[in-house]
Each structure stands twice: as C-alpha cells, then as structure tokens.
Length: 119
Image (cartoon, rainbow, N blue to C red; front, top):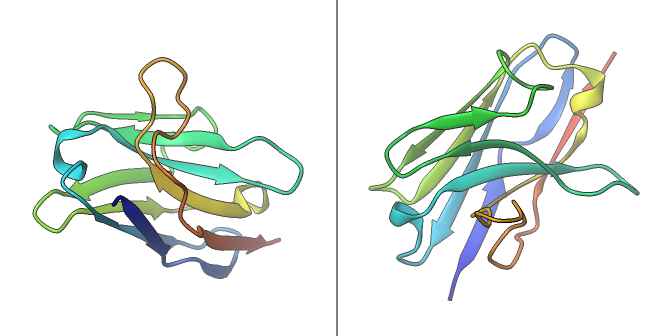
C-alpha cells in the first residue's frame, strides 16, 4: 500500500519561507523519481519540481531559483524548501511519483498541505 503524507504548509507573508515534507510509505520511494505538485481551485495540478533517486533535480520556470527539492531515501521522505514566496505560490501542495510519459502522479494522492502567501 502506497501512502504519502504531506506537511509543513501554513500562512506566510510574501518574501517568507516554508519547508514542506512528504513522508512516503512503501518500498517504491527510493527507486522512483519523485515530484512536488501544486493545485489552486479550478486549475489543473501543476508539477513544480522533480528529483531522481540519484539527486538530479528539475524545476518549473515559475519556481526556479526560489524552491529546492531534496530527498532522504533512508527516511522515505521528500522535501521542498520554498524561499522568496510570492502570492501566486498559494496552493495546495502534493507529492507523488510522476509518470515518465505524462508527468501525472502514478500513485493515489495524499491530502496535501495548504500554502498561503499574503501580499
């Protein structure tokens, strides 16, 4: 059974920082590419960062230079350090393993963690 539990969200002012964490159960974690997604009301879920099992990262242009994705395979945990936050970063953030073909999450979604950035 694959389960992902996101945490670390909250309300911050623009320019502030947050660190999100995703605790994953199951043996899939260490061998999969993992990613952070975000979704706002009425919009499609957006993949914002990925990291391979070896630590190679990619970022959406909208977060490049501000967000840093990291992973601890021993703890089955994925992280997202978010700095210089902007109001447009407000969203529910989720973690999952992205499909190689479509970037859609492979596994069932967790409950997500809400990030709200005030101007």
